[in-house]
Length: 234
Image 1 (cartoon, rainbow, N blue to C red):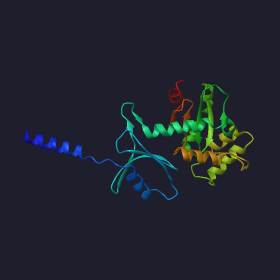
Image 2: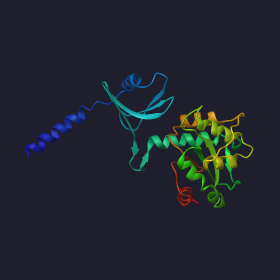
Image 3: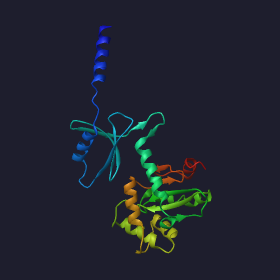
């Protein structure tokens, strides 16, 4: 009994002397760690005491900092089973895509009222696998809208191939050739490829394909047509 009382007293004292992170502590330690070209745009309090949402020029993260130590990680809403960082990122992605006209996308299939927007790379194996399903998705009522995201970066061979696909007279055919391992003639024209790549970087796209449903749901990776249509509620 005495041991239990002693243990309970220790817990009570620890609770009474809990030290929460300050915004200043988070900012100072992040400034020591972040690349010089990464700007901290704002720091916001969260429902978790001492944990702050940090919005930088490159990403959004959650941080807790005491002294010279900082902890960065995910925060979940346990009741809704939702990753708050991903929820925020996906909402921002859906909003940004809503502002892009279809004239700046490579659109496969006729309008059906339902669509998926895909950040794609012609050299990506899983993007090539996804492209094999486009005809089936069209037949089942889902339009596919492509945005270019050459993972190797601006100026890479993947980038030049993406530009060539965009500049082709028949963009859909050129996309199919590129994703089938064929050769697309090198072409150049005014194009949105760099703009789309930069958008993907800004929105936190880390891999391809990244699928964004018309409902706003974001799926980072390949799904079969059946799985994708279930996710879309079709």
